[in-house]
Image (cartoon, rainbow, N blue to C red; front, side, top):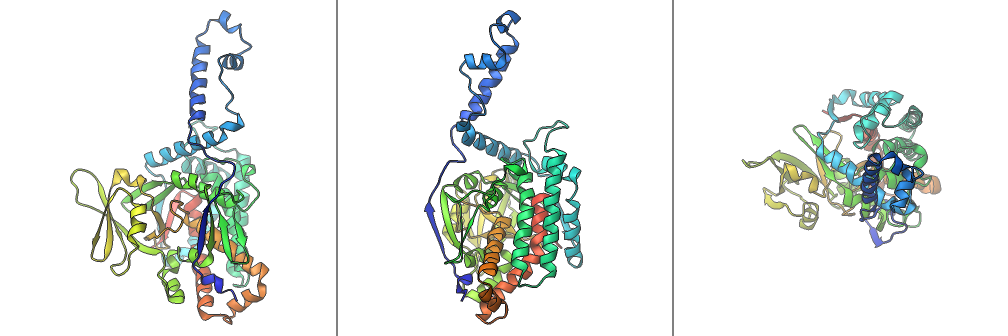
Length: 440
């Protein structure tokens, strides 16, 4: 009876279909050829220009194809992705840390979420969160497109309030639909390949496997909201007072479409920092979350940081740390794993790092490596699975909530929804606004 909720299982198999990305530079090469053709055309004598029907004919006569060729789409996607990543890793991050008093936290989060529901603010956020949008007044998204996002945000907020004020019996469905509505806007504001809502596929982008209570995603799975949400984070921002850098997630985003994962609910719950103690208490297993502190190291030659992982008693496996920090110095001190990294090279790490409600960092022992799931994407999977259990196994779902199956399963489930309810708006605001709030 729903014992699968605490199971810790995963299978991964190579699987892909029509490619999203390509490693060749065909698109960039064609852009360069078109730029040269334009320069050549502009210096042609008028008499020579009359030999052609126009610039397009001049390009064709010189063997220059169209940028709209469908065969170029994978190459174009790679170009857009890498340029956006370079823009984010090269700039000083514009998002502001915002400490909030714990007593005011829930109300403040709702206020920040409501402040997103403004057409002009959404247009500004599009230019803040994305780098490759141009500098002109008309660059970015239109007012009509911003209005669509505003309506998604408004619907998301209303659904969240319905879930927050409703019983636990119906929270999974309300929270999942709320998160889905917010996700549409988050994708447009962050994903370098998406700039209109009508570009989003109709699928959820993942599947629920009812027999095993698992989520299936990646590889040849249907593309949709979830896959676009993963692609909305081509960089992963790590920002705390005095420390700020973006992790280059290009490898993660591109390889997402090369492997298919079937993942249990218990494994996903083990990735959530707020679930760390309860996960160990109810399952008897160590969670995959380890406290992470980043401090300045003594190095007169360059700005250098120490990543101190663990609490002195538990720390992640050596293999997990090595794959996440390949090429960097890894040592041990006082029961903690110490990774020394030059600040200028911080974008090169492949670590899965989450931030808890209080703004503290956690290193996640990543079972999907090299795929780095954004935390909001992990919650998308979890709430989707719980909502499917609620809808298609209502009798057993009721037994879980009434503590008639297993006290451990009931406790783990209840704690997830109480902690997620508190963190929901923080994740939304961090993923879509100009602020990075945390409880002081």
